[in-house]
Image 1 (cartoon, rainbow, N blue to C red):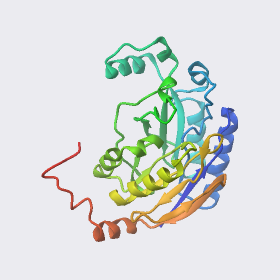
Image 2 (spheres, rainbow, N blue to C red; image 1 turned 180 degrees about the vertical axis):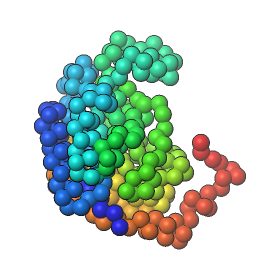
Image 3 (tube, rainbow, N blue to C red; image 1 turned 90 degrees about the horizontal axis):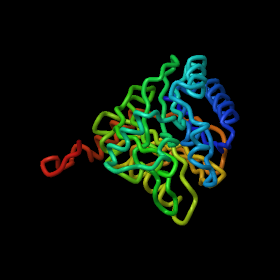
Length: 285
């Protein structure tokens, strides 16, 4: 059994306030024997639609900036694995690379875009990996690409107290091939920090897709979400058979649950979806 802490928070526009709240959640979760803590997307700050890309850029940080450094220190001090999220400041090389990938001329506004990045820090306070959100939420009236840049690399699963884990972010959940690739590369748990926006059918989509990604891959799906502002809450942990282990509703704070990793093998043996795939007819990279 592994004790997992999932955090549902209402990030403000005050980065330092959000950092202090995050450090408190880490400390309290560790006191309750959690071995891994998972934060939602936009942990660093809420970015309202009125905020410009330049304004968001001004609060962003490099991956070795103060926000991550403080999380690393707290992870080490509390002997806990941390999955967190930041607005990662892009450098000129990143911007040029993004333009090459898109194969078209971009506006000068690119100079102020940032990555929506997940950082994974082990219990020794070492940053062991990071992941830049691949799919930007340009849908249902939103256009994240006005402020954010998309990553261009798949995440390589890493070891954690939950075994090999894969990382994806929010809108990535709508693209099932990404979760499948992470699973085929060894993930037995998927962490999906999210800022799922309220709206017609949105909670239904959230519940359905979190369950589907867990069931079709035989994994634990851990999806910490934002609450308040424009977000719907309902942070979830779903087991490999689609059972909702945690649904935080509109509660802010953290919840700790024991997850049985043996549940993964038993589910995959009884429902061998990965084994029964027709790899002679289709395959993923």
